Image (tube, rainbow, N blue to C red; front, top):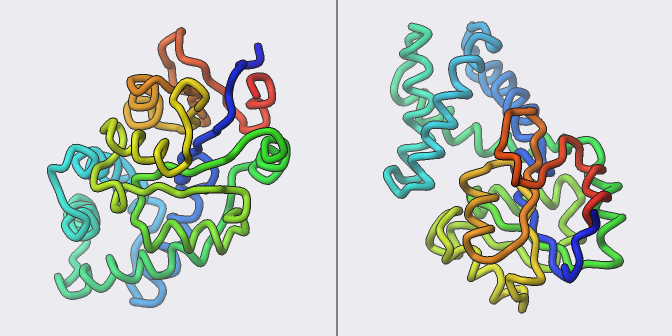
Length: 229
């Protein structure tokens, strides 16, 4: 079951180590309180989350820029739940969201344990589509930065996963070869297919328990990675 020949382990950050959904929800409770917006946050989140995922897909495909992603995901959600918010407030909320997001730092269960398990035997790295300024704060505030030799984000690479250029950039920075590297992430398109296409091994962190192709290696909990590494 162990995968042989691996020297470099590349992780996605959001939704893989850093519990984005939990931290994001707490951030919305905070910023809506700051701005005294009286709305049902759970209802908002149920509408926002699929809208946000769709905008991130557009962002990966270079069909929308960072500024519009941050604004439109909020604007579309407020419109969908028919909650009126002034445009200036939406722009401020989009900025405050980024500011407060990195103050919440819940990690997935088993994050520290699996990083401690892997660190003595592998070089660990991050490849993320997240925004550069936020990702470093997340890692520092969650006290996981010291586990990783390199961090590659889409703003540094100039493209986003699954574009092969970001994986090739990460390999170059890590001084690694694809055949001795493995990618671990939650997104089949961005993390798994993107990595496999460049010659990495890949493991899907399938915490949502959705149905994946049977040939794709997957785990439902981070500590299950010990079966492979």
